[in-house]
Length: 311
Image (cartoon, rainbow, N blue to C red; front, side):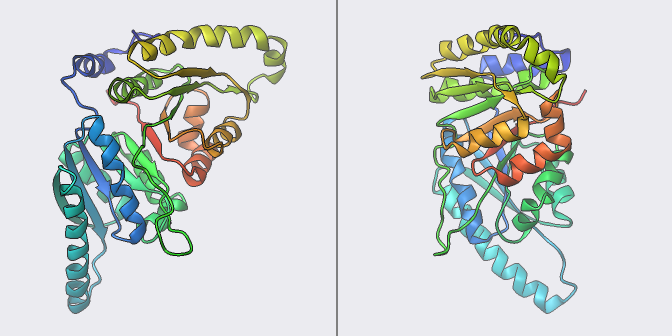
């Protein structure tokens, strides 16, 4: 049972998830710019299949070139490449649909996701084409602001030999779950429950005590506050252990959320960051300010953001 009761707008989703009727990752939209780095995104389906993925919508966005000959040549090349990626995913036992969407990438991708009612969006945050813009805070960040769907942001790049330098086949092997105890964090926790139920993976639960909030007060009562927060997080640990998690660690550091999250990411101990994208404290800052820019742009591991649900 979650620590804080969910608001009415969340309760139906939570209950259907607990019954198993709702698969959180049954149908995802995978955004591709058809470049070599985008091939890395295809690897994520191996893990997502283990948590219920059945169907993939493979989407590529393009602008019109206003040149009939050039448009025809570009469309032919891109169609061939898109079909190649489709076959790769189909060979993994998935139902795969493709769509060429014309328009400005972020709003176009958001509209396609809503129209097809996907359970999550997968988008790259580094590379060529639209991913280069995403690395600078454009496409991926804009989609994060616009969408009502969970979004998995993955930094994709090639090494100097033009080969794939990363692997995301074990996406949920060691999740880092960041919580601020908000309703949105509770919703994000249901996704973690699903992952642990299926994969029995070890988990780290993280709550950052933001030193910018009345630092003197915190320092005077830091030990008491740490104890209270750990007590608050213990039921979450117990729940995950009951679902079969290999191990669950609780960490309550004191300091700068941005710096501490990136420090955790750089430690190479974790495979994905999972958190709510709106809430209170540092998670609200994550969506709106410097923490968002830093984590999404600098994280070498995927970041799965679960947005707040609209009324």
